[in-house]
Image 1 (tube, rainbow, N blue to C red):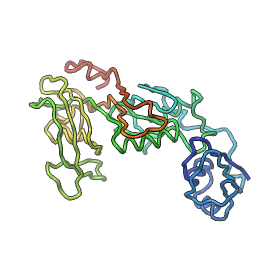
Image 2 (image 1 turned 135 degrees about the horizontal axis):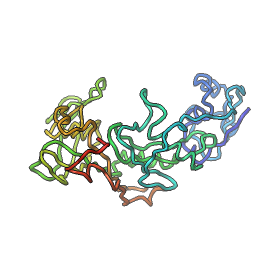
Image 3 (image 1 turned 90 degrees about the horizontal axis):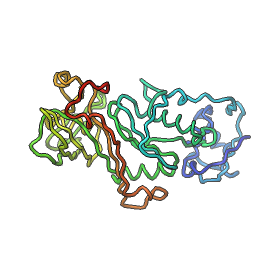
Length: 324
């Protein structure tokens, strides 16, 4: 028999999730069977798969020792790059500046070197993240941005912060602002645009319409022109909805595709300027809580930004930046 004690970060977690992370070599089918057969208990009492744990709960497992690996661990995240730019950090959260070209989470093309694995390595080497003692919680991203979009991503260091921030993001109590460079010039220097979109999952691309169509979702995008050059404009964007590729697709639909965007823009126009990646950065974030935020109330009203966005600094005379 082996027992685990639920920690602060485990509070509120389902029993099956806790076990899956605490004993990863235990197959799910056996885990569910052992819970039914009362070979896995909580506080010496029968539990269900969806039993929610509280801090201090003792999870007892009357299962074979073969499922408990006490050998030295080789963590995948330790092969991630140490290159991590931090905009802000405290005991609960990190605001990380994700570079363009880096994935937020692992996928089939890249597993080891992503933003979240860089954050895990950073916290592990600081002594703030110990996979062995945390059991069921690892540092987690609250939001994500596309691979070729740069900017601020929020990471939670504990379960309570993750739970609060997920809800605040859902309730749109965290405001995100973007900088981008687009083709063309604007008559209106500031406006709020409305359109309708349908995503094609197989192509990972959205179609945009000026009027509602069956199955379409509304998207609302605010913009302000900060600077204008010859046939290009630097914009600040505020999203009032959070749709797939919203900024890229919506501005392209309005006749102003992002410079460097090959999916919704013009390769010919991009080639003429010499950019192969979209000039888009989630550069500013503001916490605007309308309801209680628990342990994160101290963040309310605070704003954070990336101080040096290269294409903002160099606009419109980009020169020969290696960031192109």
